Length: 154
Ligand SMILES: *[C@@H]1O[C@H](CO)[C@@H](O)[C@H](O)[C@H]1NC(C)=O
Image 1: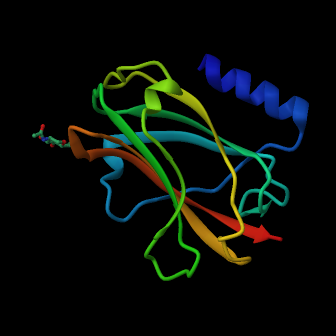
Image 2: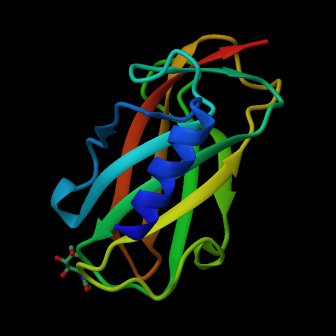
């Protein structure tokens, strides 16, 4: 709640940060994690897709409630640059997501974090989905997973 209030405040102040439309991942049970909101800062255009430049810093903010407890987490973001559903281009991996939030995560206790990322020049200039996944290293079916669309500009 608090974290969300802070984000709303930050967004309202900065004006540029946008809540983006997210979709659940096909291969993850959506009942395992409730994702309340996803923001990208900055996200010009917004809502349906973020128009992003290569080599510029962006922040992904995620407000979620895991329906599982975990002490070992993993986090990855992949781009589906070819729009073929393969999500084979790594955007970012975080070896220890506990650096980003309070750990361990507990079932039904909300969490919030900010994740900094950039898209480099290996990413094509196209519109494609980015997949975000945070999972329990001890049980990979316990995951928070969603996709959102970006449009990459030079
Ligand atoms: C892994 O997580 C799923 C979903 O929460 C659960 O149903 C299953 O029992 C877990 N498996 C183990 C070995 O804990």
